[in-house]
Amino acid sequence: MACSTAPTLAIEPCHAEMSANFSKPMPVTCKPQAWAAWLVKLMGWKIEFDGLPAKQGVLIGYPHTSNWDFISMMPVKWAVGLPVQFFAKESLFRIPLFGRWIRFIGAVPIDRSSPKGVVGEMVDALKRHKQNDEVLWIGLSPEGTRKLTEGWRSGFYQLALGADVPLCMLHIDYGTKVAKITDFMRLTGDVQADYACIAKVYEGVQGFHPHQAAPIRPLPHRTAVVSDKVQLK
Image (cartoon, rainbow, N blue to C red):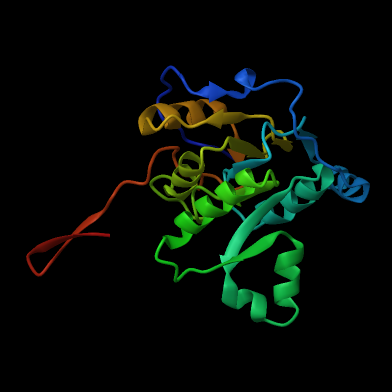
């Protein structure tokens, strides 16, 4: 099994509201599943988790460098009873058996044709759950792919900031084989400062594959010249 240390930004002072500033004990507890905890132990993993700071939030898992991440982290989700869901396009739910399976593991259908866009629809979902005092945590991969990229996609940031909910930073650490779910923060809107805080949290975390963990920074825009016109990609 190959491992790598996740590259990060230069660390700057962090002024965001971090885990230490959330009330303890955490106000939202979960219902652990004993069979999943046994499976996690059998796979050689340990879990650090002591609850959630709110009924709604966004959870990101990093680094995401292998299909093994899904196989390893789903039992973790069940073991601690994390109420994390992720969104998938509606057409997938109409596929026999597969639709039932993805719903079972936490998928929720979303209308990608909405004029608000996918992020806008997810922001609305979180706001509705806040108004109704219902639980909803949305899970995302900030890298968006297992391959090496130049940075992180902005969806998770827009979502947590737009819905004004805590961000949970799950460590998928193959160096220690610890799934750490104890780091939370509230984004400030200062992108560089917030990313510096996130980079500090993930400092030293090792992915499954070497050199495939994206640097913790916003994905830069690319420009391409086509027919004498500059277009953003």
